[in-house]
Amino acid sequence: MEMDWIWGLLGGLMIGGAGALYLLGNGRIMGVSGIAGGLIDGSSRSARAEGLAFLAGLIALPALLHLSGAIPVATHITSNIALIIAGGLLVGLGTRIGNGCTSGHGVCGISRLSPRGIVATLIYIAAGAVVVVALRSLVGGL
Amino acid sequence: MRIILALIVGAIFGAGLHISGMTDTNKVQGFLDFFGAWDPTLAFVMGGAIVPMAIAWSLTRKRQPVLGGEFPQRPDPVIDRKLSIGAMLFGAGWGLVGLCPGPAIASISYGGLGGLIFLVAMVAGMRAAPPAKRLLDSRTAAA
Image (cartoon, rainbow over all chains, first blue to last red):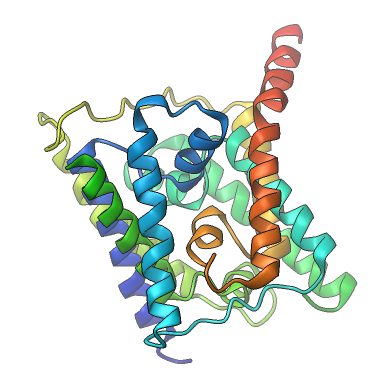
């Protein structure tokens, strides 16, 4: 548990390294909601094959790490189906209306000092914190 | 080549999310729980990710992407209603369940039924976004 921050830092460096490769190699921003959303609503056009390959890698390596038993992870997702559906709808809708999520606005936006990325990140962290505090105090758990 | 690089980028990104604990909803909701037992891991992930990314942005000046194409233009620094409402809705959903799009997709193989239901709902939300955006645009134009 005390070592979690090292894993966080290491994983973060990998995430940023991946984003750097995508930017310098393909000239693209590694934003998951943009890549997935573009494939879903058909707005990605020329980036279709790259987007699908990106998603394949994103699914395959964690699957390998988990299923091989090398680094198993529990998601601890809530068993409350209503919460899951509401959360999924809000995340899908919000990231596409606001044009980015944690990877696009957070990692790629803040690192280029984009005012939009910084403002969006402050807003979604604040909104998330309000909801978590409300869940903890009103429902008494998550 | 571009497609192979995209696959590698996705894989490194997925592994980074996986080992950093970001596919564990407890760690994400723990980070958002500023007044409870705060878990700072997500801040280390963000900080770690921003460093290589900032270096990459600095290298984009006076250059072209190695595999062709153009670097993305800087978007107009407009903080409009779509950005703030979108970020607010996203943050609320993120807090409710503890998943954002990257980890939701990366954990598809081990997220169980709950993870799959979240993904289906997220795709539905993404599908609903273009008309919702048009509505926000038309209301802004009318105001």
